[in-house]
Image 1: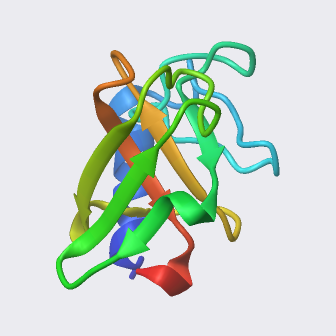
Image 2: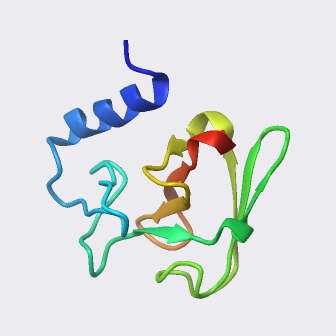
Length: 114
C-alpha cells in the first residue's frame, strides 16, 4: 500500500492525465501536473530557500521575497498546514505559484520536515 503522500502524487498524475504541461525540478524529479502550469522556462514551480520556511505547531510559514522565486515581485506570507504539504523529490523546499504570485498552488517539503 502506498504512503499518503505517494498516493496523493499518484492521484494528481492520474487526474491530470500524465505529465503534459508540467516540468521537472532542477534535480530531475517531476512536479505533478496538477501543481505545475508551465515548462522549464516559465513554470510556476521552483525551489525556494530553506530560510524562507519556518515550522510551527500547525504547519509551515513561508515568507517569500523577490528573488526567492522567479514570479515573486513583493513579499508574500503563506501559511500551509502540514497535511497540505507534498514530499519533495530532494531535500529542498519547492513552491508552485498559480495563477499568480499571490496564490500558492502546491508546496513541497523534504520528507523529514513533515
